[in-house]
Image 1 (cartoon, rainbow, N blue to C red):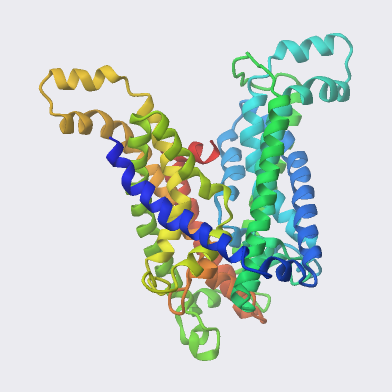
Image 2: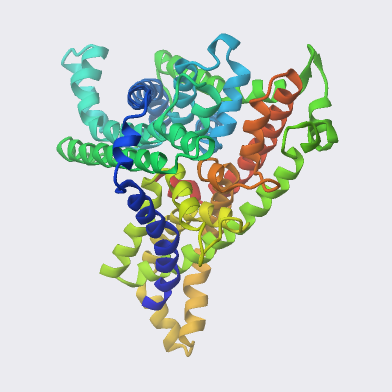
Length: 522
């Protein structure tokens, strides 16, 4: 079985470790670090990145607290639909979320920090509902009932009993939200404007617009160090805040009138807030000049919006490009992820090392990965910069860990005596493996493949560096359309974003039915 780890380990070393080492080599060049940090406006970029991420995290915890409680503790009609309404936005590409809030928010909000923060809260509420809700579900009712019996008011109950018990979940959810908002790229690029730029966006601007690759590499390493510090501090706080909860998950129907009002109010408000931005985006793709029309949809494939008039992109072609890249990325992720999962499941120490290594790309921003690949594979003998397959390989680098997470628990749950029984009955090792292991992982593998395809469809950060003329993906096309002046390009951008929304939602539904979304939240 150790031979199974050869391909995943080699791919990780070539397309992740090697680019990171190349980036680091750029950073340690004489004068590069000092020159990059001496750039005017850099302090503002770093400060904006930190405070918007902190504020977005706090507001997301506040907004997600009530839905996490209601969905974790109560059973009601439409509960699954509300949970889906909360979860689907987290599955969406960030460029779709940015497009939705461009459509929803008034013009005066465009290019402001508050637009970025509102979109971040919308995108990350699912993290709080999933992580905090899992702890809410096992808080023993006897504890809260005893506090009420002793005369505690609702505020006292929340402050002195509930929050201390939920502190580990709050730290876990807060850390994940902070990491997502700190490294946000698509949403900030569409909504923030030139005055509200994060480190992630500044890295892309320096590398692609200014040609300052050394400066971009320095910022990538600065961001990496900051993120590592946040994760280290959060891990320490989570360890100190750990609480043992022995209660079984309890989901019940609302009994009192107050409970029913709470459930209806929170569930209804949550569903409306989650659906409204997307619904407005779809409606904006159908309106031009104050009238309902399909003009924006019809012109996506016509010459009016093709390279001949200066847009430099074919929106309809970007759809087929994204679908092709998604299929290739899903295939790579399934092959590499399956081999890695089998190796991890059959080994102990070495399997653990491979598991940790495959998770590292998730802790590294997509922009950093794209920049590293760009500057690593642009010189002989490995001049792959113009190769079309480099984009789906970059997507697969991020998607493969989710395939591994979906398969490893299933493989570890297979009793060893099942394989032994197959061997006793005369099955060869290959046939025993096919009949026992492959059958068990077939269903989660389909879901994981769908999740990998959805990740590829919406990937924006790394693709910004790797895309070439004629091979633009849907997120690139959407950003360019929405960045143009005029009502028609905006409507076409909303139409293309609606298409990406539909494709992602369909794939997410398949992944959810196969249990792959649980792997993403793990």
